[in-house]
Image: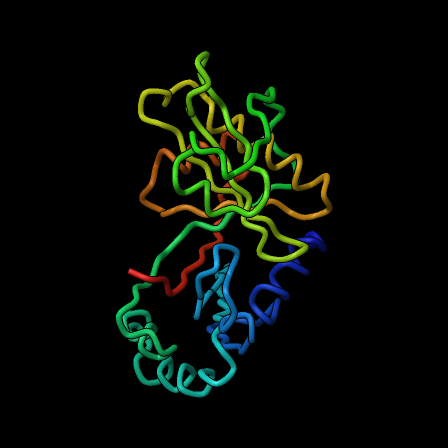
Length: 220
């Protein structure tokens, strides 16, 4: 049985879950509202097994369904235009979640994302981020939490090149995942399928690859 927190996250984030075999285009007003970083996500999809739920703005459902019928394999190339963003691109990700993060020791401290020493990508978050510093206080690695809704919080991790290979990323992800679970949500983790390093971090932190995938329309 699917964890209730994950089920509620998918229903809230996409607008429908679960669905039967095939592609299911559903409408959600969330696709017309700014996401966690203030930017639009006009199309988001999650595929589990032989079922895919594609969430688009309600006014784009009919056109997207017709496109899916007409183009089949060519749907993704035409999807940005179908949701009103012809210059945007489709990103593909492996979709993971964890109910039992790896029992790795804590390594980071939660800090204000506005701290000037942090990289610019961490400044996008509106709540504390988890950071590892060197002996001089410099940034080594960090995790931000994308709070898509009350039920699902996605983790994003980054490590400076000089600090890679020390196991910092996996420890940070596991530590942040424990906090998300303590807050009553389910931690999720998405990465490009070709990003082997990120896949290894996820697996080591307790986020197995269950064969789930996601894709969405993003700014170029």
